Length: 167
Length: 337
Image 1 (cartoon, rainbow over the protein chains, first blue to last red):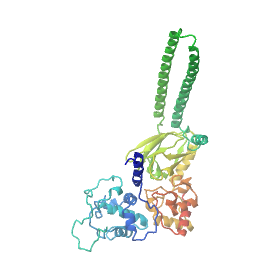
Image 2: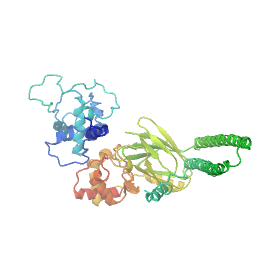
Image 3: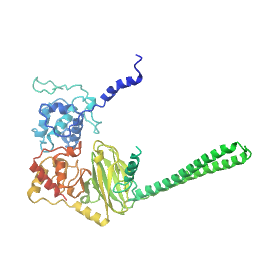
Image 4: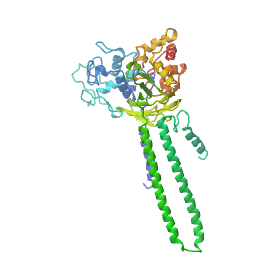
């Protein structure tokens, strides 16, 4: 006990403090990711989420979907997905469009940007990890704030029809 | 450390000249503040020297006093005390007077700054983005509004009223040669008056840390004669020439049909994205990417090929393009004058 001076205690605490300096890596450039790696690489990344939020405004997604509550287009804050709620399904919806109004954004944004956008869209219907959250959104939402710990269907879905809860 | 001192001095001195000079007297506002700075510098320098001189005198006198103490003791003490008493009162009075003088000088400068405006200033809006400047020349006639990016042209001898806005985080516009800093705050409107006195090319810099590429957020400021300014302004109102053939035409088609047109605008074409710099006359600007690279065909191509290599973290994505497509885009961008 006597050998433990406050200085050595501080030294012991240093690695703990340094652990707080760990930051997630930011991929600014399209890496040649396997399609199986993409959901993990984008889904849990605060940077991609924030960029997705930026793109949501820039590409005027709110024009049809409002700020998640839906308008001319379907709402994005609930758990009803006409074309699947998995992130890769959302990317396909964004890039290739869907019948009855959803335009294709291929050649309007890059594939990486579509993944970022899908990351943000998915974060709307589930509680996002606190350390991933971007700053407070400026716009008022026309729905209740998301309080679900995990995605829960608002109506019963036939098993196997939609596997939105993928994690 | 001793060897580094002159180097440090040279480095500090470098901030006092050239296109980004903190001692800037190239604008009315900068000159006013510069004049006030001079008054403060020379007044406080004189006071400092006076105090040091007295300190030296006290040291010398104290030594002599101690030597003499052995001999005569205390007979003219009352008279000496009186002299010191008057001296101290005079010193305190002088201090109060000098401080009052400096206060008045500050007040006069402040008033001159407030009155420096013009009856009909040039109305300009500067919008800060991560990490570039959007510049919009206002005009009551909508077709005479000019939108450009990362460059600010001003006529010498005419006041300009700059409205400052931000779209994302706090930035700060600082054209040290012309005037002081002013913050651009999201959701608020700030303003800044400029009145350039002489022509020249200056460099403005974002002066509030705004993220990863804060350092590469420069604004190219050109102060020119009113005639030159009018010529530049009229050239900005004309859409760039439409490419007629060759690689430039292919580049034009790519620009319109690929990702470029979603964010960038080129006057006279369907490309009308408003979230990224207006590229209508990009080839006529001295630099691209907010002062990062000089505008050459090679740099334009290098930038489009991989924006994240040049300015990591910026919001322009890497668009997958073949080499031939890249060359065509380079040829097209070069025609945007």
